Length: 67
Image 1: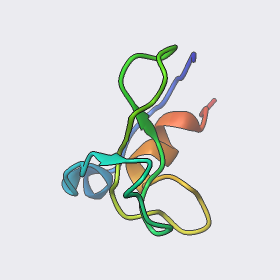
Image 2: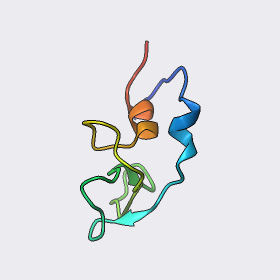
Image 3: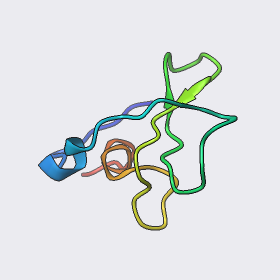
């Protein structure tokens, strides 16, 4: 994944990750996969979801390409 981001807000990085398995993750947790890019995800970020996204604010900032 080729990402380019200008700035990730400080508050987006303040909440610690909460590595959570697929079996234990809840609907309000970030589903960003942790680990190697091409490996099967066994753990997910687990931070609180950001708005309508399936990811936390930090991972939303990481995946959205800014020009």
